[in-house]
Amino acid sequence: MLTVAVFPYVERPEMRDIVLRIRSFLTARGARIILPRARAAEFAMEECGADDIERLPADFALSLGGDGTLLGICRRYAENPVPVCGINLGTLGFMADIELNELERRLGQLCAGDYRVEQRPLLAGYVTHPCGEEHFLGYAINDIVVTKGDVARVITLGLTVNSTPLVACKADGFIVASPTGSTAYSLSAGGPIMNPMVRGILLTPICAHTLNIRPLVIREEDVVHIHLLDTRQSIIVTIDGQETTPIRPDDTVTVRCSDVRAGIIKFEDKDYYQTLRTKLWRNC
Image 1: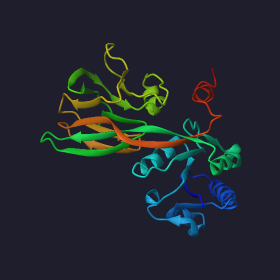
Image 2: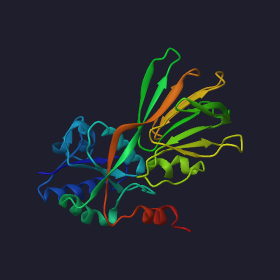
Image 3: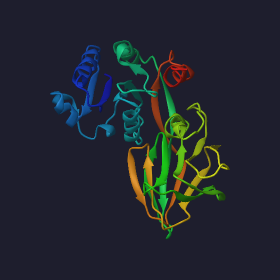
Image 4: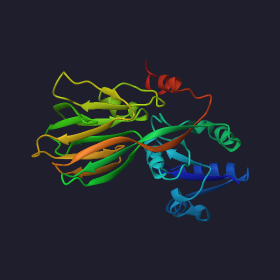
């Protein structure tokens, strides 16, 4: 029997009806669905509720929302290799492979195993204190961003790759992005688009106060270190734009590609470059 975890995270009036469509379709084919217990109670589907759902075995998970919803669910499954498929209920839905008007057809393919799973690397973020103690910040699918803590001030940052000091500049911050995240914040800051299956890490400055620094693609094996050069300033670290941690001025933020992978479900008739054309360049 297939077990499908369903995560309805967008607050929309029709969300309950969508979840009922999914349950009706899947149960008719002998599958069972599980939902986070609180959401199951909201939809009067208590029999489907589960605690610590991301720790339970499942054949795949469905993300109902936008790309942000999908990112959060992939991070929840960082320690449990369950592939995630996005159902786009947001505005862009660049990472989601199912549109609402094709829901039942795509669910049929999922039940039949007619899909592939792309293993996307997760970035791991750490903060190192002057005493040498290292603290794990979390995993990111898209990006780990070091940015200013005070809205009206720029910060002076030093960027080191492996053991080589690379650049020091005034900026609003630095984005360390995975190839998956190249179409997110990094793109808005002027970074290049990378096919998500390319092995590499993208470094993109945010509003740098110099013309001498450009976005840089480095190896997946490289390790990035970012620290404040002016300790009178303050910085914060964000993970996928969803989790924020304040950093002390004398701390160093380290980002490396982890061994953890997020499994994202894709269908054979959905091409990455077609998605670029239809979702990012549709008005061109």
